[in-house]
Image 1: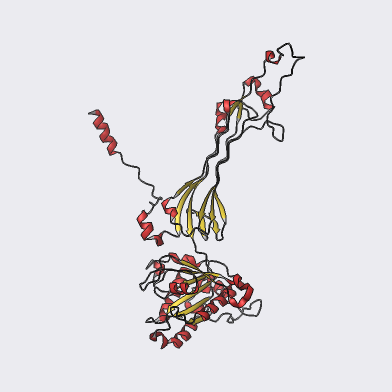
Image 2 (image 1 turned 180 degrees about the vertical axis):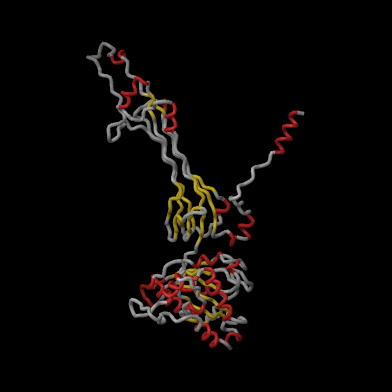
Length: 466
């Protein structure tokens, strides 16, 4: 009966509830079916290795008088006893061995990595601890060695990952291949102490200051624990050009037509769930310098009205435009109201980050091979080209340092400082409005010419990232 009662009480004990701040990892099925929700954000915990332990060492026994006497009739004279030799520091003190340093944790950018999905499967990483002092017999000798240092744990992440402390400061922006940041330091190894009787301590102090005075000093031989940090990893795609537009506008088809990328293409909305990257070749007109004009294009998932409020795929994908220098608006010219579609995308960009609207952009009117688009093509080009203000328009009472004009970037910066909210018409006009049919390969050369021209303008002005 007593055993049954104990069993019943043990069954009533509940599992400890998880902490409120810790979010459960997504199930493996969600990572496969809904990868677009997890590929660019992850929270991981890293722990550096603990330091190795030192040792408490005893002084070697002094050689006895009998051992120093020669034995045997063939020994001529007395042999001198050998003195014990120790490793010395630069100040002459005995070099006592120490515990090995714990392994550090380093996060580095690797071009082979594409997403952060694997960090949802494994969210904790620990480096190896340092080795202990090899104290065979516990006696001080010249053959003793310090503990081996723990191996540094190197964690690869995709290029463009921002590493920050969870709910804290940004540690690094790994925007280039092989960029790295030290996120957790390994613990320091413990020291070694010499244990001698109290009447010999003064003499032992001449050898080393690390003399154990009482049992409480043993704590100095313990290695220090390594740092443990919770990190937030945020992926921002590294691309020079970003393709934006409503669903089914032809962004993925455009990417596959001018690069070697092969994204999923279908006739239903939201075919693209994660950004696709493609490499745009250099400008052949530059001759030998064409390879220096290559650029990376990013095809972002389609936006709909209210995306900044979470509708559709939401606004999270707009963060991938932060590194882009040029934005390409892909508009379906055969839609019911192409101009309104263009304004919807521009407004969503403004609601997310107004600085996006300051960057040079090109508008591509796609699907002009359809009869519905051909009838109103000229009117569409004229109307979209007139939306916005002219770049470098004059401002009363203000002069530019070079030609007496104020750029739109300066005007918008001053308006932002004054707290004035700008409308779509107050931002710069497009660099060009190009009519094309990506599927029929119509207008591709003209479109590439305008995109490269906008890129050259960005490289000349060196627009900052926002």
